[in-house]
Amino acid sequence: MSTYVYGIAASTHPALPEGGQGVGDPPTAVRVLREGPLAALVSDAPAELRPKRRDLLAHQEVLVEAGARGCVLPMRFGSVAPDDAAVTEVLAQRAEHYRERLRALDNKVEYNVKASHLEEAVLHLVLADSPELRALAEANRQEGGGSYEQKLRLGELIATAVRAREAEDAAAVRGALEPLAVAVDPGPGSTGWLANVSFLIDRDASAAFAEAVEAFRKTHPHLEVRLAGPLPPYSFVEPGPE
Image (cartoon, rainbow, N blue to C red; front, top):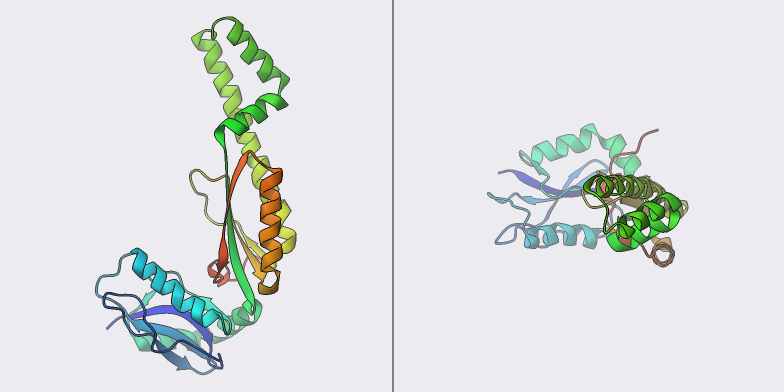
């Protein structure tokens, strides 16, 4: 039977949640596989695994429970190995890497920050910042809205200004929060978000980081800012670029 992998920890971890409920319906039992200095939190893989809410929560709850008492390298949802032997083989082959990551991520948590423009607010902002756009908009208004070509030109100029503002605001998100982080992962681009950034934070600095996000939100009212965390450090299992 295939083996579902939740995360990797040191074999000396004080409280791995063995016997708890994992993914699947009915839930599979969480087991611990040990190989030298490392241990993997696993269960039997369900025959059909889908990213349903119940299974996503079960995956995260196993990691949260284990992470509350010691460092765990979280695997992404849906990580499946052919069998237990394949898991322990990887633990043996990559022991040095996983031990380094466990040391680097000890007492660390991940926060994800997403930001997008509030459309009306950012339109007012780009118009306020550009005399040219204000003059063109006013000229069109005085001509009853302007011709098709005038409307098209105004729309293109506004779109260009908004794109420039997106880049500026994305840099502002990272610039305001990066000083509080141990590491930063910009993450994949996502339609609708001008910034989608994960921050690795010392657990003891969690409250300060959340306060910094709230302060940024208040000083940038044209942005919708969403904060998720604390999370297991999914984005930092692999080391970043040199």
